[in-house]
Each structure stands twice: as C-alpha cells, then as structure tokens.
Image 1 (cartoon, rainbow, N blue to C red):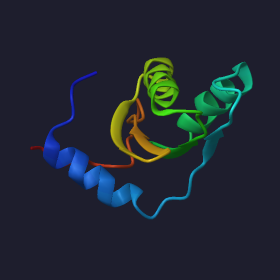
Image 2 (cartoon, rainbow, N blue to C red):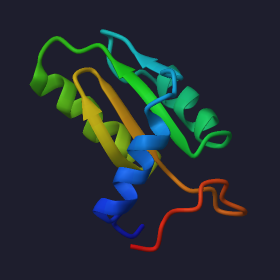
Image 3 (cartoon, rainbow, N blue to C red):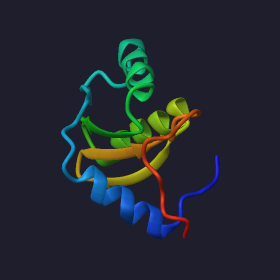
Image 4 (tube, rainbow, N blue to C red):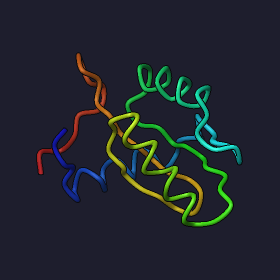
Length: 100
C-alpha cells in the first residue's frame, strides 16, 4: 500500500465532500457487525465517508486507527466525527488518481 500524495488527497477530499456517511460507528465502538459492514461496503465503494460516535478525542482516534488497519485503507480526511477513507479496487478501479 503506497502512500497518497498531498495532491491525491486533495482530489479525494473533493470527491468525498458530497458523499453521505455510509457506515456509522456507534458508542459501543468497533463491533464485529460494524467490521463486517465495513468489509462488505469496501467491496462496493472505493471512497467511504464514516461517522464515528466517540466519548472523547482519544477514543475516537483509537477507533480511526483501528478502522484504517482493519480495512487496509488510506485515511484521506478527518473532520470532527466524520472520516473519509480510500482503498482502490484490486481489479478495475473506478477512481483514477492524479499521478502526483
């Protein structure tokens, strides 16, 4: 998994701006059901907006890190309790990133 450049992140932030949150992580954290939902959603969408309900910033950051490691996705943006992640499809990616 190569790192995204700043230009690519900017491109993905623009694409993710109009998205609605597809997955919502509740106050109970990252349960097995949420992880399964993330896995199935990542097979349909390359760019996801996820809403996180956390008690404080530290627990929210722990959830964000756990989501990134379990989905093997790139973190594009975090604003408040909403995060945007990106993982290209293995075959025939729909979002073509700029080279630089």
